[in-house]
Image (tube, rainbow, N blue to C red; front, side, top):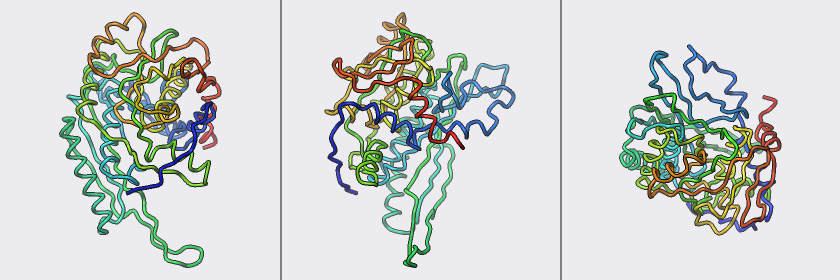
Length: 376
């Protein structure tokens, strides 16, 4: 499908846009849900649903089924229904890549990872919807084989449509977006080497792994800008594409450096892009950051697109200064860039050639992140 391509200007100060993104329902804290169920059965949780001093919702959890063993099970998910408004093939590829990346960020090994599919679809008896379903299934095959991560189970829920009447008694049909939730399950050899999303120490180096492309089609940023400017979201056309060969090489290298203990924290970049991932990481650790945007490996020509593109295959990692050489050497020819440092105070700044693009504090970001569902 082809949609209108947004043409809004890039603001010089993107601080308010970051706070707006942190308040988005698809990005904001859902701590109220995480606190409603027992994730401490037999005390086996290693990486919990809420992480760091700032209690940020993580992208994966780790449990030890046998308390007398250090082996653990990693579970994560990936879901991007808005990309279906452009192409269900890319939507599915991104869900698979996101689920895998979320697990890898905690220390999962790509060689011991399997997938589960959960289709939530609309009327598959309609030619267009069946065509969308076929493209999604093709992507499941293509990317599970390329990543070497087999689908071991799954389920489907078809015909998620409402048929009725509007306030004028005209016939009305409302359908969910074609949606695929992909879950991963993996085995970790040593749970003591699990990686959480929160930076730990002042002075640690901040890295961005992977390229940022001009891929904002179906993004949270386009949706927010459209709602602000015209009362309904922008969609765009450049949905993120997945390069399984490139990404799997980086994931394998990262798994090794995590196992060697060279990583202090790691967070997957997905919904909301680089800026929201950096913010959530800082909130989790309750430590500020200085980030130089010009050092981010990016093909984008605008600061806001670099900050909010939802390109796949990216991680944000913090590394102790003493481990810098070993970490960079071990990552080899993969796309790795040192973009900043962890601060000891609450200041959070993103600059472009010395000019502030985002200038805020941990307290302000925490308030924005937790405000949307604070009364639930």
